[in-house]
Image (cartoon, rainbow, N blue to C red):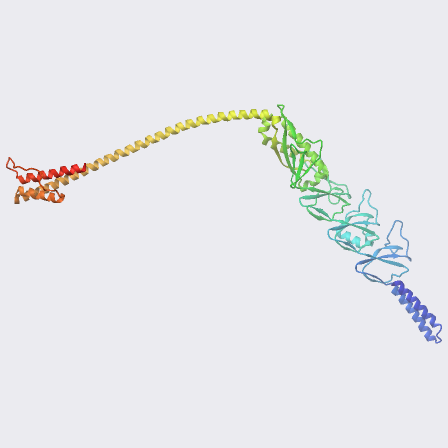
Length: 538
């Protein structure tokens, strides 16, 4: 567009000037010449106008009317000839004539989500001796240096080469002639892990950390130093320059290592098991006791790496798991074998819990030097029929004999207790009987007194009644005679008891002349009735 405007202005200006010489009037010639000059000027001005789209950046190259670049320089920062450090922002720009300047537009650098941009500068101050990355600056300063190339190359003191800072997600208007950008994935730290960073740039590390009092210190690096960083990254996503930092993902899950017969030795981590191929590793731990018995022991060791200790593990054992497993394997085997040398086989079998706690303390102390926390040591099967069968059978027979003896003693104790119990029960029963007899005596005495009182009362009642009846009979007898009174009483009795009065008894006269014959007959009849009633009851 700029070249076309300039060409059109020149053509129109030439036409106006050439036409002016063919016009006779002086005023018309002046007018045409003035018009030609004006058109030329407008064409020149219009040719200097450049437009940059909103999604682009303008790269300016100066072709003339400027000093030459200094040796080793790629971009111009002081109007030198060549590619200019400053870029054109979106919009219209004047005074960039086609002959003096070339304008090239490039798309903006776009960093999508979950990506980062690794930046390498093609110009700038040389890196410090022994460094392969530019020093790290704040994010705000790095953004300014990226979007203001002139500042990067002058006051910002930007370094030529790989930058330790990165570009995070967003749009950036930078000079592609100065900066090359490589997009890579952001560093993701999965759950139950941490990321240990090893910086490949910076000053020598100065942090000396004593893991245990009797061990050599571990040298770790702070944020601006070169080496293994003391602070790990916790689960999440981070804009880590994977060229400036080495990233080691360390699991913080509790891990179980089994030393079991039939297995080559495998680890369980997060519920998943995987084989560890190691031809030199025994399937289980074999120990020898002080009395000469050799037998296998099934062992399970549980450990974990605390997040704060992950840099120590990387510093001492590296990021791979094989050195850690090798260290743990040799430690566990040596400690179990050493502990077995001081005990007898039978004591080892019977004191498994003691062996567990003793081994746990010793393994924990040794692995703490590596930054590894031992959370448990478990002993499974100890020996087998082939190695300890005879010893265990002898122990079993001895134990059975001991148990039988204990059982006999307990039975004896039970018999003695039973005897004592029977005696106690008998004494209690006798005491009960004595108490019952005592109560019965008291009851009998009280019953005796009661019967005596009742008899006395009855006797007094009978006496009173007899006296009253005798007095009544006497009064009746005095009035009607003794014989008649007796007759009346007899008739009353006969009526009350319904006595049959048909004579069944032969009556004769009295020889003494005192009793009447009728009286004797009635008395005989009554006696006969009473005998009959007695016979019926029997």
